[in-house]
Image 1 (cartoon, each protein chain N blue to C red):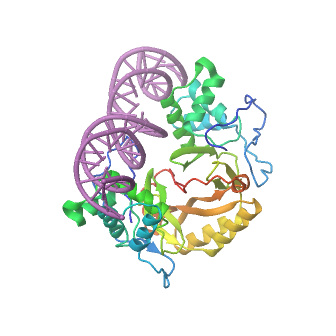
Image 2 (image 1 turned 90 degrees about the horizontal axis):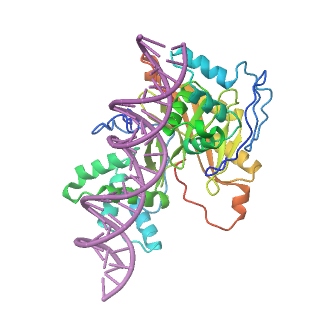
Image 3 (image 1 turned 30 degrees about the vertical axis):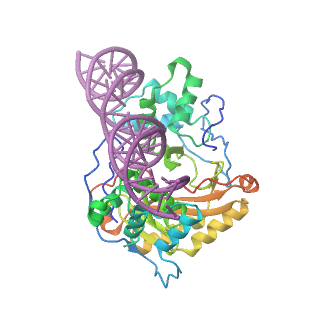
Length: 189
Length: 189
DNA sequence: ATTTATGCAAATCCTTTGCAAATCT
DNA sequence: AGATTTGCAAAGGATTTGCATAAAT
């Protein structure tokens, strides 16, 4: 993902089995990510289990969010919805509210980069970590079993019950380290 | 440091003050941290190299910050300054401005936990990562050479120039995983 | 004597909330 | 019908900034 602007993609069909499309850099194969429910179905299940309702807005948001694999923030999602959903766009508060629900439902993961919340797919997507370019803001995903091993070993030693981890390696991506312009200050990782 | 129960933006009032419960756990020896300059000296050097001035406020802040090893945020620093520096306290904007300079100078590291910026010593302090308890907010420091090795290997593979990394393992600390109360939602790590 | 810093108040930015109207089940 | 959601406008909270004054070189 390159934070400020994000690319657009086509609409989401409804395949028998949901397929993840890629668009950002990724350094591991997805293999056959096998999830029995589509994100929308999974979300509806979640909503029902909590006595919440399946509204058009919630549906529109999940569809847009899972129409392509990318990192995004509330603003970019809002803009995508305006572009793609036209007059049925969703309001900003609803976007925020739904994003929170999607995280609760385990469909999205949230992280903070440069002082704003950034989301990425979680449901049906393999666990991974990130390289973050401080200059162009690009995110590169990578996966390392060793990280998880270290994590678990350290946790065990401290009798700590792991619920997750986040590793962000920050610096300059190949392109940016070639250019002369100075990098921005290492800020909020 | 035990961070306060995180007030989510806007929804809750922030507590007037939380108690900083002694310093944090550390799982590696400091060894003989060998730095030729004291933090204040180092900072003065930095300021001079940039044509900035050594003011009483900046001095007061560095002294307070390095008077003990702990994690802190702008508010707690501000309060410490009020307590210890009495009427010569420093204003909030100056605290923020100086904190930024200290990060630039390499004296402090900044991270975001529960939606607020948290700082810790960097100068003369060994590189390390954290275990973060989602329930009590405790931070446990640990050090692992392997993390750095993995980091560098991954970076090499991507021709990525590493400037730093951040690994936060979140979950429940030993104490909290014993207790019955439910953990808070995995939020902003 | 200059120039940079400080403090105050006000502004920003992202995010959340109160409430009446609209929408689900 | 009855309950939950939505959208709007406004509020919140951490952090930043404009500007006149104070302090450092």
